[in-house]
View 1 (cartoon, helix red, strand yellow):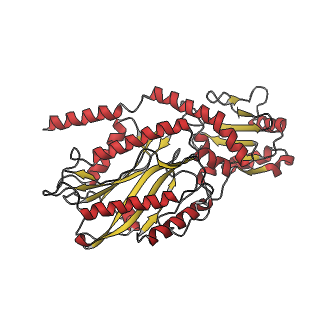
View 2 (cartoon, one colour; view 1 turned 60 degrees about the vertical axis):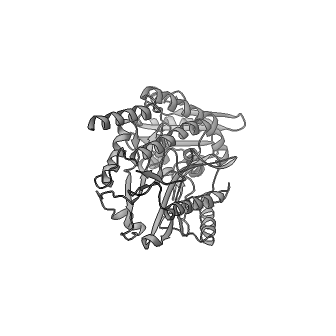
View 3 (cartoon, helix red, strand yellow; view 1 turned 180 degrees about the horizontal axis):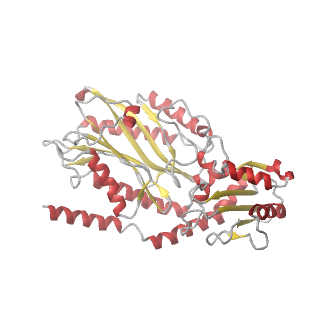
Length: 437
């Protein structure tokens, strides 16, 4: 029996790993995507933000979150102090991509510092600025968006000290440009993002099956560590530790805060349990974030009980209400409040906490609620929805189950995309409970 189980796992591993390319092939893809973003996306974003010069400063092992997304595949970190300068001449329709560094940074960013001629790196930077005389000099600082707040105090102070005083009034926040860079997905990225979501779904289906789960024996921790190990075996990474939890008829529904802070470990999975997972992986610098449900069949069952099927359908309906309210230009708070009102008018009990998704798991862009901020989110919730952006459509709805004499919570999360043609799921969504026989 053990040999058969091992063979099935190896066979499954081969099938799923076949979707994942080698490290060398990944490097080619990452660099190709990055070059495309620099050449076709960045000029548009700089024009949209009305910024003609963007300066990004980082030191090794303390990288600006934006700079980390701009390094070529073979650069795992910045080197020494790395300074990037992007200069956009809108009249000539050109963009310069320069590095005040000893060498080129990949194919796209050209070294513009000869240390032998000018030993002072800050002076070399100011020479670039003076030669181009930009109207705005954008630095990555932001009150609300951590991913756009990457310039550290030391670099900021030293830059101001080196910069000729006549340029000081031209320094502006690069917040909108930095967010645009992080949140915008290109067609090339979306092609691979769809594959990544498929892999995520496949791993969840595998974990929520009798290949992994034996009722009465397997614990939630067993499934959690199976998820972690599967990802590692496939040469991928998780960007957060996955969770697996249980709702059952004889146990009270815990509050949302309790589910985060006091989740029981090693709980044994039984027949009749409603399982839930929260799981996300990283591949080709993109991230997924997915929550799905499974039901463990009782001995006399071939399908989930009707009341659970209906409860799950309510979760899908709340998803539909939310995504129907996506509209370019509307803020995250506007989308949130309108969707919550419509959901409650339709007699659901929704909570919405959807976030941008892509180069980071909890990425930059409009926050559409937080589980503990259902009245709106100051700052990040005031940011508008732009096209060609991706989101983790994350929410729940509470449903009363008379047969269990309690409430349950249907918690769903799927990758979605907002583009010129409206909203779509990146690669489908769960529309029925996964059944564990």
